Image (tube, rainbow, N blue to C red):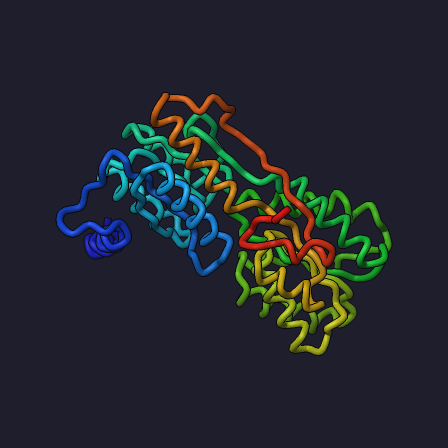
Length: 313
């Protein structure tokens, strides 16, 4: 590994963990590793996991891999060397993350995955993910209704390395493709990015000025698409997202984006920490490795009840 990069990662981890001298975690430390907190979904995961860990009496190391599998591997080296008790992970690639999780297992450190699966079983203790297919079907059904079952539409797809991107797209199409008068005229990845989605949406509009609707693989891309549409004076184009972010909630309440699908990021992360605590204390979670949490449609009827990827009663 590049020595300068290792020193940078170690310094970052020490800063987050609050170490004043040396670098060693106690046996009661849980590492929380996610993509960038610039995306509010991943920040909610980290906040939820850290809050639950603190409640259960653990110290935490909160780290970010920026969807870079190499950086993720280096962070695993760091937390393994620190001797953490468990790792909560939203991974940097379904295939690329298997080796890192296996490395932790070989070192006697259990991993509890949230949001994104990996392509191997028996390596992580738990893989707790949203029921992306069920959620995508909810979003697609609402999209079809909003579109009046007809018209040209575009799809924004997430990162190709993320299993969720493909599952959501499949869920969308298993519903939408049943309606022959709904015609997809453009489909492109924007890599979960708001900035990329803005640029992609601009290009899609130039090539297909008759677009009536946009269905997006996540809320961040939906926000980028909506901004591009507004800039082009296309305020009547229907946009549906996926995640349940506060930004999209506010857009729905303001009459912008029409709907999204809530996946319970905060609750999911807290559940992972609870299972880690159970495993640390007993050697078992008592549950299957793969666990699905159902999603909820968010539209004008219930958007006001949404706060930080959770729906109030």
